Length: 459
Ligand code: DOR
Image (tube, rainbow, N blue to C red; front, side, top):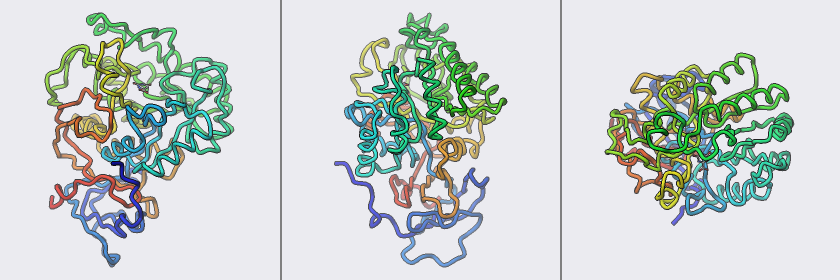
């Protein structure tokens, strides 16, 4: 049975998280101290012990040895509702988010019907209010029916509450339409999130074009198919003054184009997924990083099929560097849940996508362990950076902010058990892998939406 959103009665009136490492990049905060939450808001997050009086009935939890950070903000996920409830629903997807430490998720409009009308957006917002356990911010379509022929009523969608526009899953292929869409971006102040893929180049490609594709006899999609559209969109953003956000950048060439666009001061931002930071196309061959302690894998495993495809080692290194430097602004999951049958077929026929909300942090902690990124920077890319792209006062522990908080155990090792996922989508190549670093509690508006602290308190 699906639980309704926790009511204020179920939310502790006040809660003190005592003695954790508070990491809040929005305030440049990295201190050991107490976090006090009251009436659903952050009352205090600062160095040292809380010396004031505790509100009556205040719960106190010892979080020494753990990290306390703002709830994560995901700019890009697929909740599949309406229309594809066999893959995911708002109820299950937001529970997966809570489990993964995400308290705000932006959901893509490739649903059925697509989110191309105010009514469809209203449906998602209402469903999220009734059945969601974290904040859901819908993204509206750029074109009607996502068909790429005619613009959706973008001004109407903005009024209905979308936070961005995208035809994700597909690119906006027509450059003229994209130019017009950017004019509406200027008008509404909302970004266009483009899925950059020139389908005239990728055609039927299912993996990265390169030696792995050749070895496996699979059709390849070259890096250039992404890069030509990234270049086009940057040129159109410059022409129109519209805001461009690049979805799931995956190649070293895209990073270079982005770097130059930012150096010119253009209004361009970008996200990268955990899987493009941590996996290469060799995963399609069955290779698994030893550091992950994953079970033996096999070639043509359809859980590795994702769009854009997993790329080469050089791309992964470029993405990591760009994330560290802030050239790529944020991490977004592109959580793409599918049914078993969507993946229990040949590599060519399988659906694109990885179920990513619940493994994101555990996987990304690998970057910290490998010293590719420090923990404050990682948290920044999951909180303050995506919130800044949305222009919303989220991803922060500033006094008075909504008490959206995660507690992380950076040393906890756990095995990815897809059967225990909150998400309906069990499609991940991480099934059975041991990850180090786990979200052990998530608070949304001061209420626990995920809590394993009983097991870890007393650290
Ligand atoms: O792998 C992907 N899956 N990439 C996309 O762009 C769409 C997504 C989906 O909707 O399944």
